[in-house]
Length: 350
Image 1 (tube, rainbow, N blue to C red):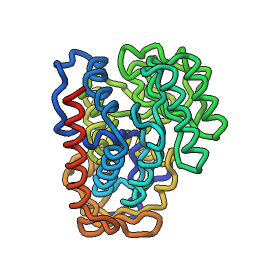
Image 2: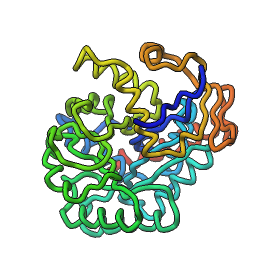
Image 3: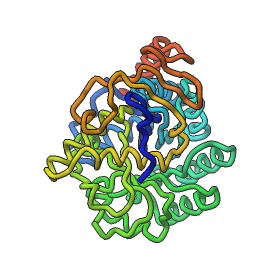
Image 4: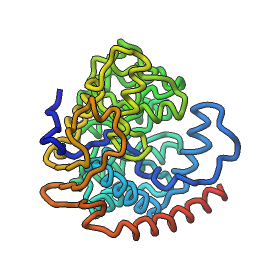
């Protein structure tokens, strides 16, 4: 178990979102898909894969900046992001890092390599991970999922991660269509890998790495329940792009766990938040002062409306009395709205 982040009656270390898609920050209000999706694969094809094709440098930057602002206002100081923008790959991870840095939020970046756009698209994704990590960026090698990659691409991503001394950040067995992922990547995994979802993994999957549970997203996509307590791997907690309010995600994870096993307690899910610090240990040095005390999982599981009053990142106060200190929140929201409208116009024409 990781070091407990409670530092005082109303203070914790910075919260960590162990799996995010910052590019989804502009998705709210996007045009409806051409038809109603009837399953998880159609949700990907008709919603998210259309959105990522419409992204450009401008919308990547403003989605990341808005997402970072919204993370900060919920006491989340570190984000492990997974990005895809097949028509704007080169330099995309640096744009995300820049936007988060300007707000004052730590970020670990990865580009989700995939063969959905052909071998050239996969090579460009690998190259972006290589460029970013080679230039000293904080991140991992991203892979979308085994079911959208060839074995050669999966092996290339694993080798690139080995060369850079990092893990691979990959969706694993999120839906039934990826249920066989373990057999394809088992020989590649290391303890540094970040395995997202794991809903359809067998109990004896044999994968090395940390599994990231995303309860709200799994319910929204109707892919099933991961039952994360069955895994022997470390288990962390992410949002899968639905904001970065980790206290709220903690509550959702807890009530879903209770529905599955009435003997479980809030401590089980609180320990998932602790696992996140193993993936982003720098956040342990951040400080969040909350509007509620004591910071206790048994209380927080049933108490909504708990907000940060001060957030310090690397010793600097970046949030105080409801406002960021580095940036103008109103300007970010206005610029993000403009970017979203441009994005929606592109989506309507896809």
